[in-house]
Length: 288
Image 1 (tube, helix red, strand yellow):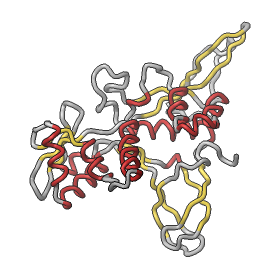
Image 2: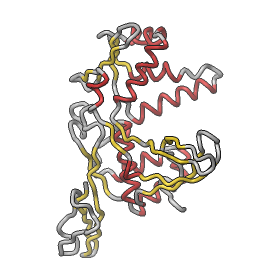
Image 3: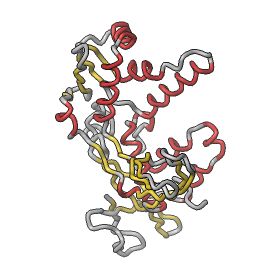
Image 4: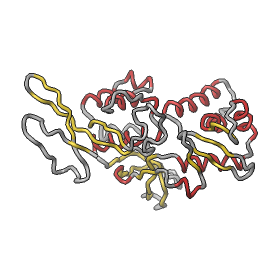
């Protein structure tokens, strides 16, 4: 959703190329009696703000306002120091969010993806041409994804999956093997990174990566109403494989997110597959 300020340089401006369902807004910064404008848009949050705690700027907010990419954001995305530290994307998000009270680390994974996809579309368009590998014949090729076709998954799946949402912004998954009730929460981008970093650190120490148990410990709040961490950790260590798989599969279906899976037809073997839209350097630097 995009909107415009009425006053740019003293006249009202309407962009005919903006869809009618999108409103437009321009933030003005006067310099020497000139007004430089930056268009903004509203991005629908997959979470609808239902999983943020009270006091969070996005609590019960269905959308968030971001500004369009400018040369400033391109500088951030190409900054070698930021890229080396792995913080370029977070700095980028901080720059495009209009509400500076939003802590980037507190953004849920799905909402973060929605903002990134919308920013890429308003910056370079919905067409995303990049390198891909066929999962059938493993040949390398190129494919053009349509980011405008990325669908948002929301909470409609909960009832179908037999999952109950709690008033605390968590949801209960009933496990088939043990009949245990696992209360789970959504992860923020920071927490997701922490899970991966923990696994990488264990690998460097020549220990099993334990990525699955680390993930379960992070997302499970309580088991059968017991939120004692020692109890939860013990449950994770001893959970039957069938329940572990069911929990992880159901959890992924519950998470409000942007679906980045699209159909791909290989030019070499003509096999049709479903590929995840890759976040490569082409994503923010098309034809660079």
